[in-house]
Length: 386
Ligand code: COA
Image 1 (cartoon, rainbow, N blue to C red):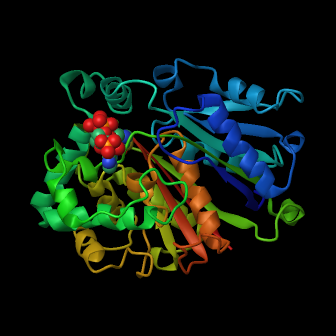
Image 2 (image 1 turned 180 degrees about the vertical axis):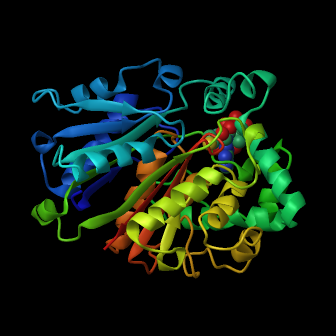
């Protein structure tokens, strides 16, 4: 396997993007990544696009070809493939691009992700997202995503004595970080009291415990390490890219408040990189709901089970803490365009490791991403370093 580097990153602003189309969102992110790498579209050998539900949200399938066409990449008839693993589609697109370059199959590959979720109403969005869980045994009996994560939260609270305030502190910290991120959907700080008084969505989760519904796109460009300095003075090396699966239904799990796929993907990533959690300087985790961030920190091994609430309360996951978690603002404040999130996480690590994350810069040389599909049926972890 060859060593692989990320040499370009591009993002759109995240939020409700009424003034642009699905295809234009991706093209904007892709063009930004090409500009960042100082290369032209003609140099791209292959493209992978993470997208969860174009068919439901914008009535569009055949996303790989659509994106290649509108990005002006069909002249050379390059391969373009849509990658789908629910909310982990972006992370998986990155892994596909990584293995394609590492294997020697292609040299310059774009990994991107895009979702335009706000063109349909709230109930249709909730129903489309329910397709990430088990439609037959969960969705059809009324389990929504907030409902499933509320079950995880209640189980966790009963087992580990997490306080409602500690849960709210996850959101407060992520909004504090997101307020400093120019692409974030919600660039405003909030208080613990505001979280605890926000509308109840699925007990105990309230509006400000939930990631929002978001339009947005992200793209990164990978190439062999030996070519990287042709494009950038600050290549960021991919140290590991690991994936794991678990049962799609929450009720089939051994323990619903431990995501075994996170444990497995994390361990594989650490093994590939020959690192341990102590070596990681920052992590972008999949905080689709506040409880998900706490489970992720523990399941990846940054603290013992049941301790993430205290770690958050003590400020150890803040920008200046011992393990900064979600400097981008996470899914909660930056937004969660489901197919794009895994790529945005990689872009955030690259920006941080280059020292370009103005206002929210952390002190790190190695960063990790953690991207979850469904309630943990697919997990992708990447580790990057300089
Ligand atoms: N965080 C903060 N503010 C939010 C928000 C969120 N998650 N979601 C909506 N808002 C704000 C809106 O900006 C709006 O503010 P305004 O009145 O000042 O304009 C207000 O709350 C109402 O927005 P609306 O779109 O009507 O909210 P909603 O009730 O339809 O949706 C949720 C709220 C929580 C149900 C929705 O965001 C949701 O389903 N989130 C989870 C998404 C999900 O499951 N993703 C996959 C996870 S793996």
